[in-house]
Length: 558
Image (tube, rainbow, N blue to C red; front, side, top):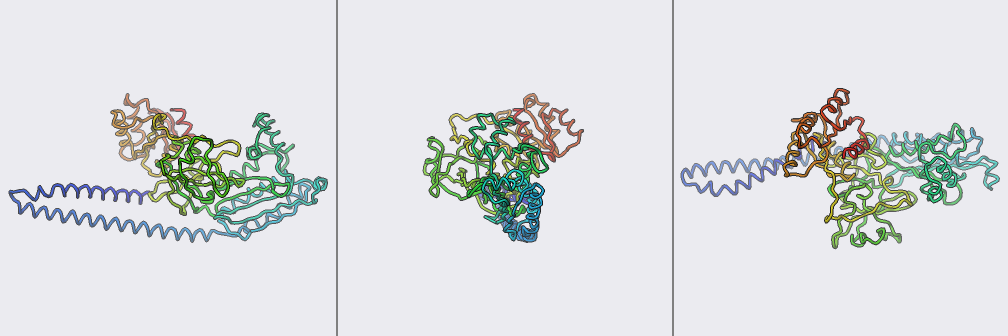
């Protein structure tokens, strides 16, 4: 894909060059043909040159059309192959959860509790690997329900309940996603116990624990090591079950939520994951110059509203949708980007992406533009070092560059925490934004790093090798280009590699104060020592790439 994108870019550049040559020729032709001495010979040569120029233009047009047809055919063939592979991988949920009822009953008996298990919807189909990886999280949740929620038979009788508790597991497909619900009729969520243990363990002050909302208290259950169990047993007390379950679900690019039952005591755990990890339906949006994607399953609807009605400075913006006032913030604000609010232009209708959140809540996210909706293959966040709390992963665009796929439910603050301040751009008094130069010969790597850095408020320029970077730095020093505050460079590049660039930067008194971070696949101690000896301020290995490490290093150096 990267080579295909590069070829297309070269063809576009050739086409532009040919057009410039044609314009220059049209300008020169009258003077050449009007020459006096040797006019006949000159006109003959001119005609021959013009024929060759036109033939070249025709050949370029033909090649360009052939390239476009080939790309279209490859996409169509690839899409068909992907769909065939997806169908082959689909299996009924029964294949992994057929014995779930028996396992839950065995666990409950070992705890001296009576449980009736109702498992439904196992005929629905999903990707084999998704079902396999969901088995452990579902079992963790069932164990949690038995140990924390389900009461012993005698206690249930005293509470006016049937001696045997009920756990219902339901599988369903909704909006192209697999939804699993695990519901029990036990004690339910004990907010007071959560608040007490949170205060005892120092997670919250006594005052904050007393004022915490139910949603904030539930979120504490996912903290590693946090447990409301009075003693540690084989099934409870370690505080890891729910944390492990959520982590695995998020690696599947899904969500896990806990709530109380609506029709009585008990709890409901809801898991939603894509039916397949091979591809997802995504909505692509634009934020300034960036293209980002959101799973369509997280979106309730797309909407447009007059921008001046929202960003009036009068409290939290809201939009009226289906008899409900839905709060509005900008997606850029959630990502911490510098220009938080979209430009407000008279008569402009602002695109809003209305996100679905836990508990039936909705939040309208303002973006600069809607781009497209299509199926795409998502590379998981943990495979490339992205923070899964913010991103589900990346997806390749048509030009071969990656776009970030956002984990919208985890970007949004918990209820009661408040939304980030959404402020208008202030061109009269802009805050200085650090300028970072990213140097890498891989279009995928440099575009991904650019997306991450710009999502965290930095201004980014790109170079394909050390020589281009050095030329850019020289221009900046002479005042012909913007100054550079930090350099992030690969090592293995054509023309001038990262070590040579680092050496040149540190040897130039005008550039030597600019911090340099090397991000490379060369992991040997010798390479690391060489980079640090030449003056690198940090050395990060790509195979262990962690965006949080990179961002922490940038903050430290700037």
